[in-house]
Image (cartoon, rainbow, N blue to C red; front, side):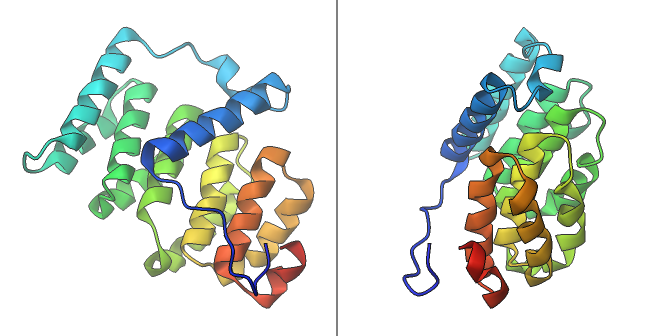
Length: 196
């Protein structure tokens, strides 16, 4: 991708982006590059039911759907918490950024992954002050959390993160490199040009 042509990969939204992340994770697992999902049981029947309910709430026209979804951020089931993070991100419910930022410290990788994905969908150039939080996530052991951190840094246009992204480009899993290059293109500094 060249700076002059301005050509960038098309942005993906909501479910398409989630499906792309799932595909990247599945490929990484099958290649033996990532074992993060192997340590977790499949979502329970209750988690599947609640996640479907969360999707219905998000699609509804009833008031305070964000608040109703956010009530699940403290649920005991990590899959349900992750579903709430995802729906809040798709709704761009910026009032819940502090709660999702706190979930980046969660002990369960599923929650960390989905909190990062939710924040990726919410944050933009107004949030550049949050860059250090996502710079730290570049070293997270969970693949999808690293991808989300890379995407957030591009979305917020963090010029101070360019050296960190360039360093990660050298050592990162191949599944993450695409996202690093895309984010460097969004940030658009001269320092990033050799990687583009």
